[in-house]
Length: 174
Image (cartoon, rainbow, N blue to C red; front, side, top):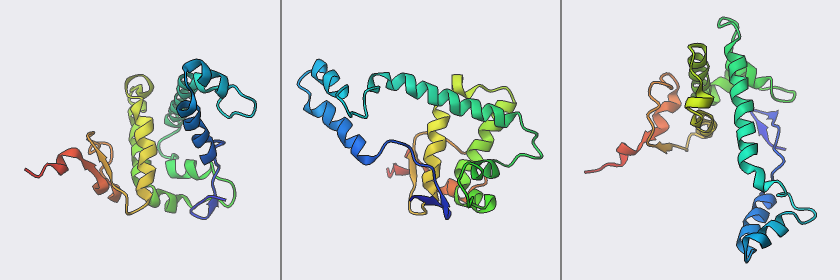
């Protein structure tokens, strides 16, 4: 069982062997029509692979709608780390520890929610925010740095993890 801060984490349905199967579907097919036959074979986990873009869009809609709902909550009673902790099975992680461990992701979510409160529509104008948000969870591992060409300095100002979000310009040694 995977745990986050000693709390059971909910796992998705896609496992490593499914990813291997997906790669094999593409690599082993002599043609696109053969690929379609194999993806629809009995027992295949990829029968809806042709709907990947639609599924991705539905997930983005769901996630951004959740952020909109969070933005409607009163500011004073709002704690994003507590809301995330509530998504875990019991025993739930302590929100303060969760906030500390995932500080960059929590601050980025708070910035996104504040932008929504101020009228922004990231689903329409900045859908990459969801992917960026997901990446910031990796910073819980103190050995990981994220190399990016984006500037997150106005989104993440307090998190100690901000120092491990490295701009491409840091590679310029000339």
